[in-house]
Length: 340
Image 1 (cartoon, rainbow, N blue to C red):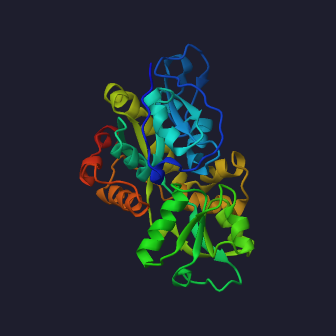
Image 2 (cartoon, one colour):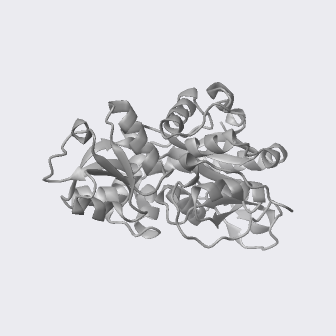
C-alpha cells in the first residue's frame, strides 16, 4: 500500500521529536492464547481468546501517555474485552501518520496537532477527549530581573524547536501580552542550559524538567499553561477505521474513562506509572497526577470550548485554521451514548 504523505506546517508537525522503536499494529483480529486476565475496575474475568485486539500509537518518552501504561498493566482494557497494544513512534506528526499507514488503530494527540493535520487533508476523525496537555510552564531563572510576564517584553524565550508545543505556548503568550519577544529554538534538551547561561530570558519547559527546576530553586513559574491555556489531548483514528469499528472503539473508551474515574479517587494508582515507568521523583509524580490524570475528562463528550482553544493555539503559532471545520462540527461526540 502506498502511503500518502502530508505536507505539515511547522506549527503542528514537531510536537516532541523523541527517538522510539516502532512496532506494528495488532489490527482487530482475536488472540488465540488462553491466558485469563481480569480488569482493575472489577470486571469479570475474560479469556485471552475472546479479546479483540487494538493498538494505540504513543511517544514512549512523553509522560502524558502514562495513564495508558497503567491501564494496560492493570487490565483495564482487558476487562472490556480489548487486548490493547502500544505502538511507539518518534514525533507528533508520526502519531497522525501511523493512523493512515495502518500501523496503529488509534492515537492520542493534542487537539491543536490533530486540527492542523485535518487542515492539511489528513483523513482522520477526532472522536473523544483524552487528558489535559499539562506539564508545560513558562519559567525564568531565580535571581534574574525577569520576574513577571511583562518583564519579558522584547526578550528571548527559549523553546525546544520551531513548531513544537513549547513554541505554540510561547507564541500564544507573546500574542496575549503583546510582548514583542523572540522565540529561540534551543533543542529538545537545551532549555535548562539556555536559561542558566542567560542565552534566553525565559523558557517554555515541559515536565518533568519544569517541575524539577522549580522545586530545586533554580527557576520560577511565570505561566502555568495547564491553567492559563488549558488544552486537551484527544482520541483520533482514521475516518475509515472508525466507521467500521464503532463497537471496538466504544469498548476502548469505556475502559479509558472507567479507569480514569478510579484514578480520581486513587492517587496511588494514578501516580504509579510516573513513579515506575517514567522513574520520576514523588513530588514530580504528584504534580503530574494533579494536572494530567486527576483533571482528565471522564466522558466521551468533546466541548466546543476545547476545540476553540486548540484552534486559537494553532493560529497563534502561525498554523492555518482557514480550512478547518467549525468548532461545533468537531465537538459532535458520537460515542457519548455508547460509552455513558
